[in-house]
Image (tube, rainbow, N blue to C red; front, side, top):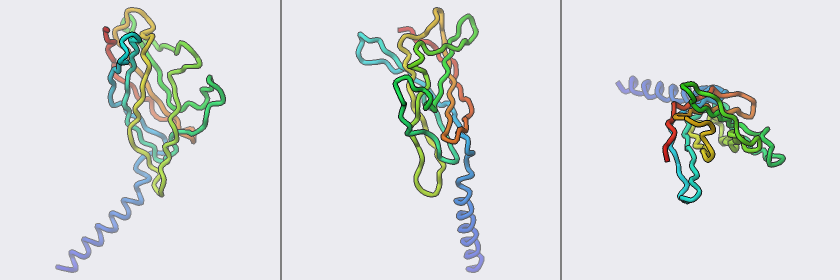
Length: 172
């Protein structure tokens, strides 16, 4: 009986060792995004009436090269952006994409380098980002909006496109 228990213990150890070697294969090298939630956030200063939408997205990246520490060359340098947002407004029952009002202030942004230390480069976590909703909706008679998100890692791997559900426009 003791020999049988030793074999089970040895098998468990070998299985655990093999599983930890496979840990890097748990996620693909391409980043993965999954929309999780949103909430409206209002500026406490009632004179500004500024509002944002806070989004939470789940992400994975198997080779751990998500984000960048590259600094912009000037205030309008959007070439280093690696987190992309597309914004849509529902007008007459159809969603239409709305472009940023200022090309120097795109909806896109840059995620700082998230490279983990150690022998396992796998990344998994949440991205919390804000969309400044001041000055929007752009069109009149908009009752809802939606968003699409994508990231690109340092190797140029693009994630899937993850979309939000239809979000009602608050009446405030």
